[in-house]
Image (cartoon, rainbow, N blue to C red; front, side, top):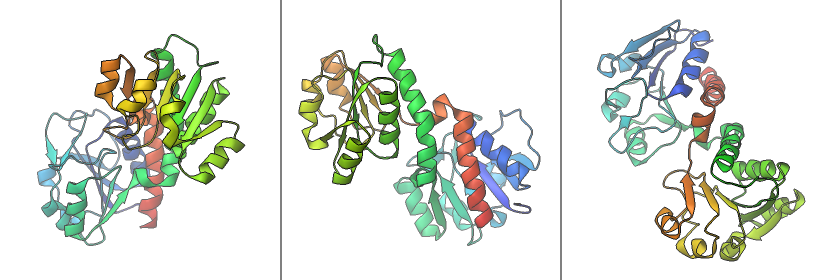
Length: 291
């Protein structure tokens, strides 16, 4: 149980509700910042203004999946107020306080480093990434159906990258009857792609591999679908870019060529916020109990 643990949850979307619900059942003392418009009542949880939080009593701070922007501001769908997390606030916490976020940036990294606190980036964990690949793939299938006029069955699909998401995407589209080719760099990935029955190619050869695709799904967080690549791609192809912002596609040139390209990071929170929230909540509960 998390009895007497004081946890501050700052901002976020519907996924945070599952985190609040889980930690509430574990008897944590929860201070909710940026939830003024939330009607749900949770046992042991109180809505607070960030200025009223006594950070000297805080054992953990939970930020949204998106973390903060470069000014320290935190997004929230349950408040119209601007919420900012500062270095002074983090420094005021006990030395054992842990800050949890989905992703980080230079502002948050510097804030944590100067405060000498521990930062846990949840989306870098293998368990969360693998669990999240399930709603990500379902969302990708939904987008492919919505934005094409052909069936997935019989279509030619290029998946770029064979990490935790790429593997799940390739397997699902193949199961739906697509002809799937997968681009990767590592020799062991090429071997695994072959073993799983997909057509492998070296991602360096991407220009020649996308000339016949109906759908291109990118999971690589680097500018990989460049103007040179797009120049050889059919204009009726659809690109779904799952990489974190700004994605790996030259969206300006895609639009110029008339190729529909969709940037779709954070699909779990869009298509299945309850499931995505439960994934985060279960892992967070484990981490907090260990700490």
